[in-house]
Length: 286
Ligand code: SF4
Ligand code: SF4
Picture 1 (cartoon, rainbow, N blue to C red):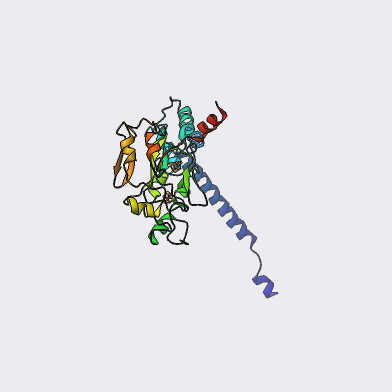
Picture 2 (tube, rainbow, N blue to C red; picture 1 turned 90 degrees about the horizontal axis):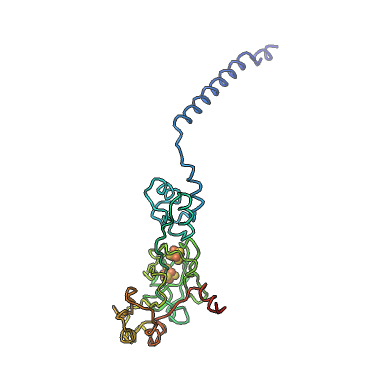
């Protein structure tokens, strides 16, 4: 009997506790609702539209820490409607439409990798078996290819490209899909060999070697290298090519894209690239 009385439930105490807790919850709820309303951060309703208009990759090519920061800068008038470099022309047009202003297209460039030596052209000197990072390969005795200036052929630039414009083949030859590339330049900074440059999009005659070795030495390690013979310099009527530190370079301001230099280069270092859409039109004869 005594045992049962010791554990008797006091319902009045439970009710009091429930009422007290319920009251407190209600009070805090009202307080939170009031505070939420009072301190609500007003967001511009156009922010969502802007976020849908930009590329949305949070790549940082615009110089802001992410897409939302870039869009807020546009709304605050701190950035232009062409803020999303990686999004290309479509992003500019869409952002301008949301903001109700005229499109201001920046003249966009296109990335160029200054090397065309795949494993077939640039003699391998070792078998690199580390991670697929050019920076890591560079640290391990300069990667697997014999040319110490050329492309290491791994993944570093491809990984950062927000529009998947850098393509590789199994011969470690890489190229930029000019139709996809928006010229954002993210790949430029990550290349440990400084091989990538954003060049004018309408420039089709390009010098594609970065070797600074002297002729015979350069040729020993790559069959498509510049040997600094200066034949292109002599062929150019417009003083648009110069050879500096043993490699040919083009002055895009002066180049008329006549292509005479291409015919004279003994090692195919100078090339004319044609954007694939135009190539398709040419093939169809339109
Ligand atoms: S980051 Fe530079 S070295 Fe590496 S694959 Fe790209 S172009 Fe070549
Ligand atoms: S290839 Fe380079 S410049 Fe072109 S979109 Fe990709 S990261 Fe940007």
